[in-house]
Image (cartoon, rainbow, N blue to C red; front, side, top):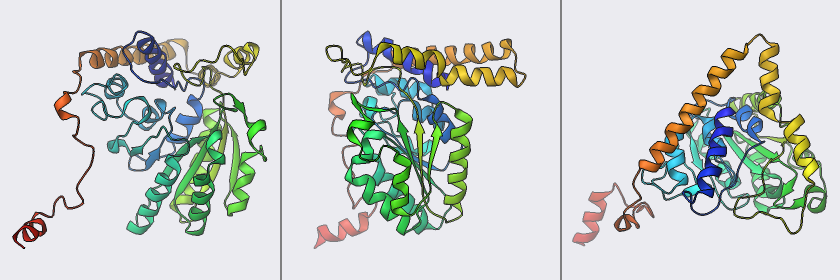
Length: 324
């Protein structure tokens, strides 16, 4: 969680220093929902994210260097600078996609889970999305399909209460999102998204069900984003949440502070926690240095990676077509 927090904070500084182009959506405040769920997975399990998914690859085990370089659009980035802030992908740790499209990862995760079932393996797919995605058609279509076919997928809604500036109560006919699972014949679980242990317990149970062939689970982690929707879209003229509300969450519901207290109660001392903090600070500093030193992609390589021929690898077939 601390790696995510410090990575995001440094990302904001680099964005404000014009080192990161495009948009920057911070996941600060939502670290427990991310890490609690990711820790329930194996390395070969798959995951999809959202437009706010800088922290999700970190939770799954991706390296900070390539992530920071990707934010800066550099050749050393996780997608060689082609994806940027909202499109991380790293198959080495199972991240098949993140998407700027609200709910865009839901059908991809469902398809990935279907693939695992067809291949006869016990891999599961974890699908992150926000409360705003619950009203997309793909949410309903995919949950219904996953339930019918008992697909090994965990749908995890990071309910931070706001779709940009719109409250859940203003856009959801049923504000208890977990209840929607009943319409598709799957378990629906609500957890405290600021409690990493609670999220991990719910995710582990869902993973066990999925691996056993019992089908999908919908988990709703009630969380809170400390920053605005994005640092390119800062709402000032029409305040949609009170300053006091944000400060209360930062003071009383910070997932890192909450778990830090748990560790101290379990016998960890301040020195051991400071050692973790120092290690994380060094890793983030190294990531920034790597990213800044990495070259920009050459304009000549612009078409690279844009498509893959369905005939690639079938040279003999292609040669036969050419002869005919």
